[in-house]
Image (cartoon, rainbow, N blue to C red; front, side, top):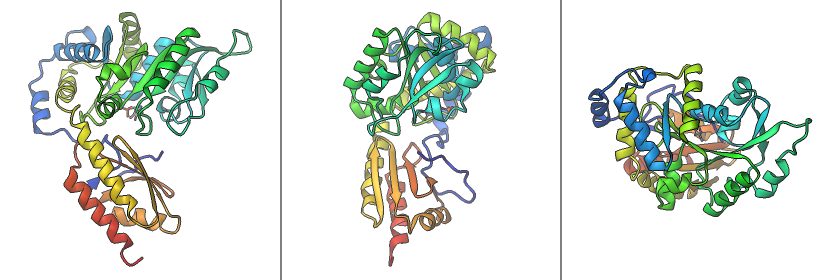
Amino acid sequence: MSYPQAATGPVLYDFRSDTVTRPGAAMRAAMAAAEVGDDVWGDDPTVLRLQAVAAEMLGYEAGLFVPSGTQSNLIGLLAHCQRGDEYLVGQDAHTYKYEGGGAAVLGSIQPQPIENAADGTIPLEKLKKALKPDDAHFARTRLLALENTTGGKVLPTDYVRAATDWAHGAGLATHLDGARLFNAAVARQVAPAEIARGFDSVSICLSKGLGAPVGSVLLGSHVLIAQGKRWRKMLGGGMRQAGILAAAGLYALDRHIDRLADDHANASRLADGLSRLPGLTVESQTNMVFVQVAAEHAADFAAYLATQGLLVSSVGSAQRWVTHLDVDTVAVDAALAIAARFFDGR
Ligand SMILES: *Cc1c(COP(=O)(O)O)cnc(C)c1O
């Protein structure tokens, strides 16, 4: 997994992440028209509506609008775990690797990271082995945290059922980092609630493929969300006339879910085109394309793309190209033509 770098020149095609989308005129109009109030007082009708719509859509009692996916996951972990508890989590998971160690730093919650399999799952056998007995030597294993999609991969439905059933049977709670849950639902052609099934809490991002500028929603029981509201205030995530942001989220949930299929088709098209170029090994699922560049070209290819105004995430010879609302099929074809030119005569 690579991490996005800042743009340094004029950008024509930005494939670094699905977070780079900019709200279009209709979304901005919805934001401008939003009815607002002070949401810390519970007075913002647009925030309340977003929370209710998301809860209904995903099959939960309640929702909580928060500024970011990182905060949403952290609040979920804080609501499930006490000081000295631990959560079982994938070595590659955002909630372990990409959130600054927040659960440990701010919650005194110990992660128990476990190597992910190639399909993004954490094998059940490894989960069972990591579960600590009730013994004073150990942290109390309290929670299983999964991620779907993870590295663009949709977790197998049978696996999710088996893992969450096992967790509940072992007395653990379950949390899903569903930053890209809607990509999983669209790829599987199931309702979003099907992807959330089996989890006591879910975090969704409005600012990834859904294209809103800001925001995530944590979903769970009334009790969990009431606790979460307290943590949100403590973390500085209590926002006032936040309906202006929630309106973008509502717009995205209404208009931008089904179209994720376009991003997936564009990622396939991109993967197909890139795989025809010499020295590139390409893997793709949902809206992500992972490219391994042959060592002799790696540095030059990445630098060349940047000079052409084409941005991707790259670390060494590994690149990640992500499709989204702001790159259409024409942009994909233009990007492929740019990439192909690098290999002309090589
Ligand atoms: C982006 C992301 C998050 C965090 O969202 P932010 O809004 O960037 O804090 C969490 N999990 C996954 C899998 C993500 O991709």
